[in-house]
Amino acid sequence: MRKIISVVGARPNFIKLAALHPYLKKSFNHVIVHTGQHYDYELSQNFFEELSLPNPNYNLQVGSQASSDQIKLIKSKSQKVLEREKPDLVLVYGDTNSTVGGAQASHAAKIPLAHVEAGVRSFDDSMPEEINRKTVDHLSNILFCPTQLAVKNLKNEGIKNNSYFTGDTMYEVLLKIKPSKSILSNLGIRPKEYYFATIHRQENTDNLKRLKTLIKSLSKLDRIVIFPLHPRTKKSASSTKNDYGNIMFIDPVNFKNSISLQQNSIMILTDSGGIQKEAYYLKIPCLTLRSKTEWPETVASGWNKLVDCQEKKILKCSRETVLPKKHPNYFGNGDASIKIVQIIKEFLYD
Ligand code: UD1
Image (cartoon, rainbow, N blue to C red; front, side, top):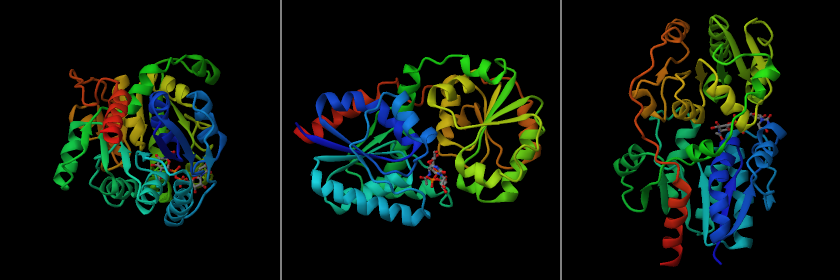
């Protein structure tokens, strides 16, 4: 049986891995390497338990580091595992530091590399994730694209072979989740009476002025705002936290509760890439707290608006309640994993 190693390390990596693992384990010896980029229970173990993922075969325990140190450490530690395990293929997911560190390790160990969620671009090089995406795509031997636009982006960068439109693995996981409303009653809130907000991206959290403006804007919304706090945001926002009556800061939530809270909200305000897509799948209007997005399809269709850090725009758009009539299918049919595993089989056995 051929061996595949998945290198993962952060929350969105685990969700994509959860889509693929059941199919990979049927056809391959699937070894999971957790880099340790996310180590808090709520951001890591919680997802493995909830999404029925087995314990990782390796945990590299890289922990918190400056970004470039973290990538270097992920690369060197992963490379050692790859040289010992000698897999036939390495799989990396999305755009995190673990994705790029794993990709560089695979390149250094001369093992073929496949990228799940390839070709996605925001065309904003100030986002670390954009640099990660480009680096990984240009190292990859097989590229699995969630949208047709992603295939086109790769073509424009000269990557014409071995890129495939498969649809989105996160859509697949969402379809399998059975959200319950118990999180709402636990929080004492009712469906369609609150906004759901998340902020954790570096461009928003590491600039305190920007973060304060965003939180102040949320505090002026006309309903309760449910706001799960990522550890990075908690650190930066500790000075501003508790000051705003309508914002309910809560601990990070698991995947199922995140989907329940999104699905029952009137609107989502976020800087997360994954949540922009989830809002689209759930047909909940989304305001993206950034100036660029890697999911322009959601904006083109009218379901997502880029409001950046502009209070007036945030408040104005929050009052627009007419939903777009059309909801085009950009992200496939929820069978990305089956397609991906079939393509891998052809790559490894032909
Ligand atoms: C990472 C991804 C981002 C993704 C997000 C999902 C990169 C470049 N970014 O961002 O694209 O949307 O994951 O959550 O990889 N920390 C903890 N506990 C943890 C993990 C992190 O307290 O378990 C703290 C660290 O002190 C660190 C900060 O959070 O300073 C940021 O963590 P890091 O893993 O670097 O990036 P994320 O912001 O989580």
